[in-house]
Amino acid sequence: MQADGLIGEHMEEKQAAIWVKDLSKIYKLYHRPKDRIKEAFGLDKKQAYKLYYALHGIDLEIYKGETVGIIGTNGSGKSTLLKIITGVLHPTEGEVKVAGRISALLELGAGFNMEYNGIENVYLNGTMMGFSEREIDGKLPEIMEFADIGDYANQPVKTYSSGMFVRLAFAVAINIEPEILIVDEALSVGDVFFQAKCYHKFEEFKQMGKTIVFVSHDLSSISKYCDRVFLLNKGVLLGEGSPKEMIDAYKRVLVGQYEFPEKQEPQQIAEEGTENGQADGSRGNPDTQSSQKEPAPGVNPGALEYGTGQAEIIEYYMTDDRDVRTTAVLKGSQFTLHMRVKFHAHIPGPIFAFSFKNAIGTEITGTNSMIEKAFLESGEPGQVKDITFTQKMSLQGGEYLLSLGVTGYRGDTFEVYHRLYDALAVTVISDKDTVGYYDMESVVQVSDAMTEEK
Image (cartoon, rainbow, N blue to C red; front, side, top):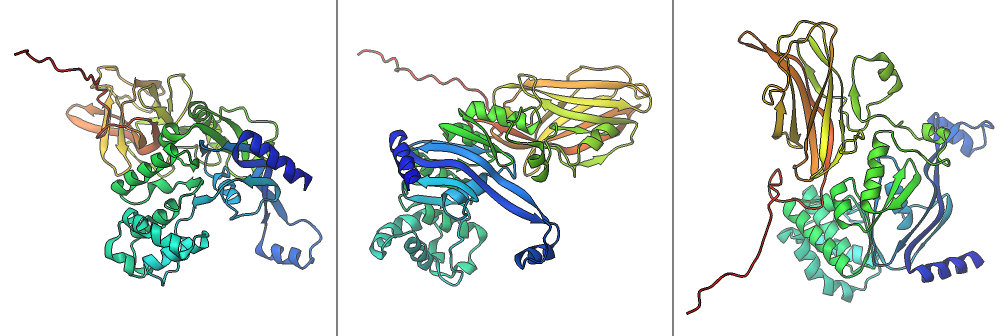
């Protein structure tokens, strides 16, 4: 009881909306399903499981009126942390205190009854959140207008498309006037118009001084909306700071260049799965392949690969304006694409190329060494060439796919020596996106018009 009093006093001093102290969530990973049964009945005295730390010793405070982002790689514990804060999961160790009514956009529609129609589910969910029928009556028009599902509101939700389902669930969750809004990748639901509506509501919440906790892989949104960011990695809180500071640190985590804290011991990292690797593609190097048990972050293991094999792309990666390997680039900054090519035959005038596609496969931009008049020599057997393309990132914020190639001409015949399609996933981080694929970097001026005096 004394500890609760101290926590309450601490929260009041700091005006904290969420207070987390020494939080851990541990799961037992059994070698075989029957080992779980044996332990339950006390039939096996030896330990037949490993401990998996989904979260390990997390300490953090989120203050009232603050918009906070939580970022990290897959499996870092972001969603687990949110589920514990919202009461969906119980911690193994540690304490969590929350001051204010929470609305959580975690697993949208999890409480829906598939046999009920849309309106009935609004009342069902509203009641579960603690609202009276009269209060839900007052909110219903706003919820249905936001969901924009028309006559389907009176149909069983089992007949809804996935888009209609999540739109209704989102509308219910976001229109109950919470003091704390918890968002886990939920702002990407529906079509582009509904997403714009969601972000507009997000802005309204910020202006109203609501506390917002925002988990997303969309680093552009993190950069644009968040006042402060927490970085998680494999269940450990690596740090907190401004969006720029933590996004930079996250980029170092992705490429294995982050100096981890002492509390994240190698044994814990090994038990929890993926190892840190360089954000590049390495080919033809046995030492590199043996040290990377799985593809590095951003590298597509299923990249389409073909060619005659007379030249081979044996390594590729990207660096930012500080020459740090990364797969995330700030819009407006300079970045460099690196490609290492080994020649297995005499190739007159090899052409080195790259191109960017968007997620639906539309080729956005690209160039090659012939267009740039950068290399007109021949490649000889055994030679290895390092090729770099340096440019300013003008693409809009989002996810892109990088393709690479080595081609050339023998006489009038065009030949492909090695191509890698969709080899690397690249994230462009932006807090200002214009219309279309790239930014024209317009300079806008507004001045008083000059009028003639009569």
